[in-house]
Image (cartoon, rainbow over all chains, first blue to last red; front, side, top):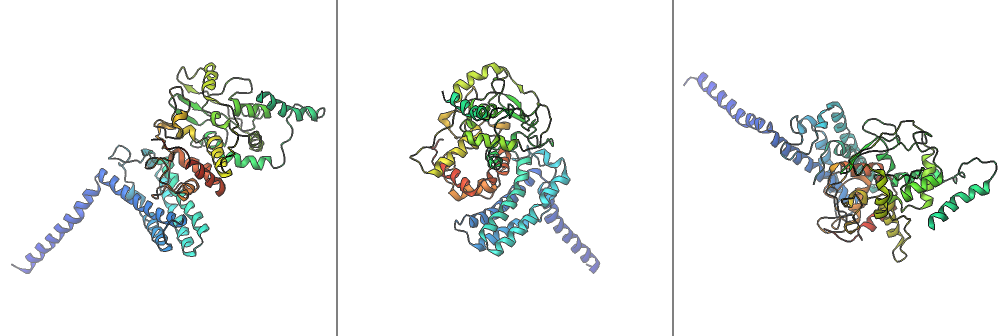
Length: 159
Length: 292
């Protein structure tokens, strides 16, 4: 076999593998039910982070380190693109989605609300580093508020 | 008898002031409005009396309350003399909360949670009135309710009141610590928690046997959770810290943040209370008998 043929075959197989991995996963993520599940996992992660900080604030067994890890998770999620978490076509009715269609009505507003989480979480991170529990509690409250606004307006009540 | 006394108590200072003053009530004490601002938050007046979604002015009413009995539109409670409550006397105000009656004597629909507010003290009611009087007047007219008969028949409301309204206030239980009594007052009178968390009978009265046991058919057709001390289902598994943090920030023990109507309650009301009051609510709720 000539080198050229080998090269072409190699390129084709690499492309094939790339397609197999990314192409398929892209196709998987485009499944709305799958997207809803992904979102729920992301939100659970976010909740886990908030919960760790809360546990520290309540003085119920979490260490400052747990709280620091928790807020790092919150920050990481807050940096995600809301479009990826809330792709269109994943409103209530799709799998067990709890997202009201209103969420997509004014996307600019939704984006703005999502963007408010990060600065609040950054302040929470600073407060945790500072170590003052009262300040942490306050920053935690402010961060919860950025979550709660959307839950209030865009989330269908859970059972 | 109590009512007669109350009216006498409210009108006596007027009579004594005599001459110069017109038919106005005596000026409230200097700290009344400031105290009233706190009562206002604890009683959660703002949320229902403001059509926030439509950009309505604060306290100008118009918010739709969707219930199994029809849709109520909350009234304007700004000091506007025509559409608000600017002309109400102290006695009018107390009677609305205590007996569920309008100044003209007609019965108020119990969507205004007077079955709970009736437990408020006279002092808290008059302070609340003093605070409301300091708010900007808005002339927004009131919108008629959209109810399904027979629930739309106002003349039937007195019968409802006879069944379900026990005029307050409720005296403190001397056998219980002050924090428990304060907590009960915050939960039952000001916070009117049972209006959503206690299921209703077919006639729309709070079912006392299922006190705070959750409501499968709550406001806006939402399910409202059990907040009795039941393990597993109610709040029996929550620590005091869990409860006070939830009331302060909306955060649940698993890191979720409450939304829906409770999100609004946290935002407008419980987050604005003192830490001592939130602790009192927790202390009281933990003693509410478990119901499944």
